Image (cartoon, rainbow, N blue to C red; front, side, top):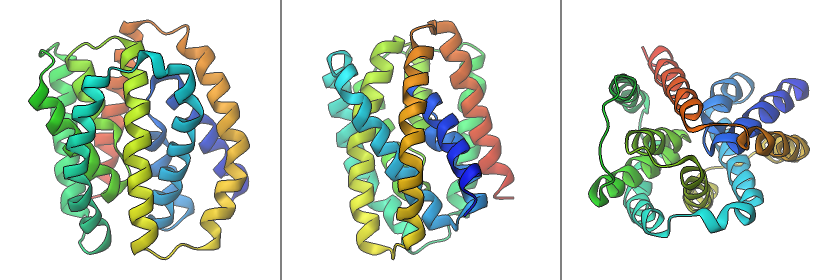
Length: 237
């Protein structure tokens, strides 16, 4: 294990997560896959994402939109099991290819200023898609980013609701994956090494969040979605 590489990845990704509510898995997963096998990389990402959300939830709980959160969670419960089956039994390459195309197409529409109203059914499907992506490839964020940016949800509500949802979906996913997948000592050693850098990243990210305006946040989201879509596409073809 390359400890310097691991802690650098975790620090930068934690900063991004704390600043935007998204981004840890998107930024960290491609690099963690260079250091670990796929299952360990995905599970480390989920453990650390859960830790970040648990640390941050107290400070943001008053800004959570409970109604949106409830619909996301209901959708997530539907999507988690199919994603877990993909994680355990199936080749995830076709899923990654499909997801990459959907993300890039959706991002293009958002950049072109295609907007939509907040919608209960869309929120349910967003949760389903996010839940499935969490248990299969460890990336719950892209569907939420697409929905919140397209619906122009304000940055405070977006971050708080996303953090609360991540606690739910990452906790359930972690429990299920620990049951069905063997876990090595490397996973837990890496987690312990990462914790101090998670905390440092959160502190820096909180400082950055206070200085982000809505327009800049949307630009960051578009960039993250583009990077994610291209990464999934290039690692699949």
